[in-house]
Image (cartoon, rainbow, N blue to C red; front, side, top):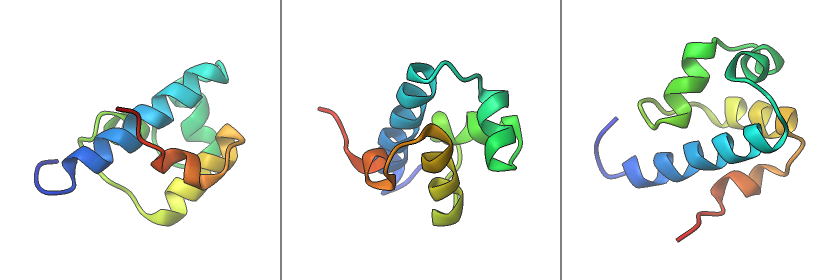
Length: 75
C-alpha cells in the first residue's frame, strides 16, 4: 500500500503487532479469532493492505483492547 494513508496504516499495523505480541498470540491465532486469513493479518500489520472498520473492530476485540487503541500512534 502506498499513498496518503500509508503512515496511518503503518501505525495501525504496528499497534496490532505490539498488542498481539503482548498477548502472546501468533498471526494465525489472531486470524482465527477474527475469521480472516493469516496472510490478511500479516498484510495489515505490515501496511501492505488496509481493512474495514469491522475487521479492525474484530481485531481489537480479539486483542481485548478498545478499538481506539489501534489509532494511538507512537512518535
